[in-house]
Structure formats: C-alpha cells, structure tokens
Length: 495
Image (cartoon, helix red, strand yellow):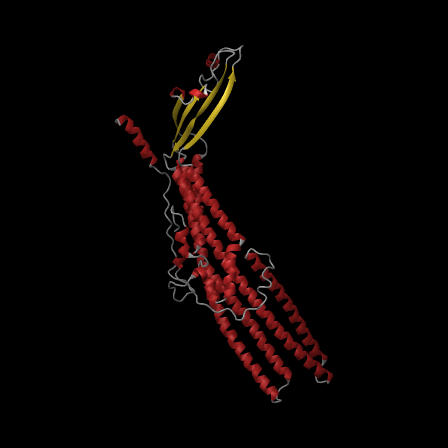
C-alpha cells in the first residue's frame, strides 16, 4: 500500500492502543505480623472450608450442606452472580461493530397534480434519491430493497476497554459476595444449632431440678405436718419451684424460636425440623482447636475483603471510562444494499447501492464530563476506604473472637471444677444420709446445687461453641478455596 494510505491506518491503530485513566493495582495493605490474642500467630493447615466437621456432629454437617442448596439468601446471591455475568457479556458485545440486515418492499403512486418528484425534492430542500421516490406525475411503481448496514465506534482512548474491566471486576465482586453469603450462612446455622442443643440440655436439667425441688417440697410438707418446721419453709420452696417452672417455659419458647430459625435458614417452613431435631444430642459440643493463622491470610480467606477489592478495581476502571469521554470519538458507518423496481432485477449488479461515512466528534464545552471524572475519582476513593475498613473490621472480628474464646475456656475450666466439687458434695451427703448423719433434705439440696453448676457449665460450653464458630467466620471459613480456580473466569482474579 502507498504511504499516504497506510499512514492514517497506522495512526488509527496507535490511537486504538491508547487507554486513558489510571491502571489498577491492588493497594498495599499494612497488617500486623500476628494476632494479639494468639500466642503463636503461626499459619494454620486446618480445613476452614468445612470447619463445622471439627465438632464431630453429623446432624450439624447435614444441616449446613442442606442449607447451602436451600437457603434463599445464598440462592439470591447466586442469581446476582448470573446477572453480573450476563451484564458483562452485554458490555463485551458492544465493543465490536454492529451489523444489521434489512429487507423492504413498497408500492408508490405519485400525484398527477404535482411537479415531478425529483424536481419537487430539489426545490423544496429534499434529498433526491433519498426516501422520496423520483418519477413523473401519475406514475405508480413498486420498489424492492435488501441489504446490510453497519456501524462501529472505534475505541480510540480505551473507554470500551475500561468498561470491560469494570464489568469483569463487578462480576468477580458478585462471585465473592456469594461466597461471603456461604460463610455467613454456615456460621449462622452452626450458631443457631449449638444454641438449640444447649437449650435442649438446659430444659433436661431444669426437669431434673424441678423433680428434685418437688421431692424436697414433699419432705418439707411432712416435717411441717409434724411441727418440725414452719409453713414459711414450705411456701419458700413452692416459690422456688414456680420460678424455675416459669424459667423452663422461657427455655421452651427460645427452643421453638431456634428451631424455627434453623428451618428458615434451610429455606424450609419454620416448623419443618421439629420432628427431625426433637431428640437431644448425645454429647456436648467438643472444644476444637483454634486455627488462627496469620493476619495476612485474611486478605485471601475473607470473601468480603476480596469483594471489596474487586469493587475498588471496578471503581478505578470507571475513572478511565469517564476520562475517555473527554477525548474525541470516531464512528464509522456504512451500508450495502440492492435496490430495484423489480424482483427480477434485484440481484443484478446494477441494483447495488453503497455508502460509507466516518464521524469524528470532540467535546468542547458543557455536558458535565469533567465533573463526571471528578465524581468517579471520589467514588474510587470511597471504595478504597471501604476496602481498608473491611480489613480493619476483619482484624477486629478475629481479635474479639480470640479474646472471648480465651475467657470462655478459663470459665469452663472453673465451672467444671465447681461441678465436680458439687458432685462430690452430693455423693458425700448421700453417704451421710444413709448413715443417719444428715436428713434427706440436705442430700436433695446438694443435688440441686450440682444441677445448677451443670446448667451454668452447659451455658458456658454453648457460648464457647458459638465463639468458636464466630472465630471461624472471622477467619473467612465456610467456602471451599479449592473451587476458586474452577469457578473464576479467565479474565481476572481477585487480590
């Protein structure tokens, strides 16, 4: 090709390779070297993807797996991912030329009392050979037309490329938000399930305590009948029984609320699990290991942090989109058609009609495009702050959970020692009663003290289990990290 022909083409290609706006780089984040509540701060090899299996409860395992497929919030998050992917495909489809096919047939009869159509068009400012037919007054004829027209806006300054980047980043943000919904769901099912089982244990202990208190009441009634004690002791014992019975009713109401919450989390009717979970668990939840890892692991493990980082990437690309609007734009249009008065001649070379045009436009004054760039920069800065806030909040979540767990474990150790001592005291009272050294009421009261310690221990162990779950959630556990490479699209990765 001659230089005068290749020069404009080369210039166009160079312009097409230009992309305005900032290139995104994940921001550097300063995180502590270790957690304050963790003595070692070493990396953990624990499987955070299915942390709930550490409790060794197959019922809990099954509930969480069922919730993953049935929970409405997770399904809604998955639908938002599909929506983002569809939007990304729409954006990418707009980057190429647009080609349309058309066909038309028409009949025209010209007025007998008018000038020839062509002259009328020329005198009246019309476009001869355009939409108005040319012919003599009173003439009638048919026209047939078939062909293609195309348009293409050249991406001179990378506005379309930035649009593609923003759409891809928003798709990835939606994917990470879905994983974050899975993390929240697993933690909520685990927390509610442990609360429900603890309430069942507390109701069973309340029943034992009520039976013991009623037995004491019978002894007091017998002693009152023989004048050994006053009726004040009897009324006081009756009051304790009624107070404990009222507390038991509250525990039953809390149990119903917990099982209703579990049903809802699984996407079922609130009462769907009533029969399935009616039998109490055989054992208390096990105290499991604390897989803290390093603070820097949160940037990889926490889906909410990765979603925030992808939203920051999208906001950065939006700056480039707005910046590209400040520069000239080039649009190419063309049409290739066959036009004839007869179908018999429509496909002949003489029926060929073609045109091509290029349009270069540049903003000069107004339209608020510069202000839009400033707006996008402000929004990107807001997204950066949100990303940093997500990291700080994640660090706090872990530190809070570690602190609570440390207190839980000390409290459990003390309550276990107290319950063991109360059990020994009850056994001693039983032996002394058999030897006639103490009345039966003292044995029953010692047993009630032991039951009270067991109830406090059950509450402490349930709190520890929920704090363990809170730690796993804070660490980003609850989604399968091995699925990332399989599910993420090839156009990009998170931080």
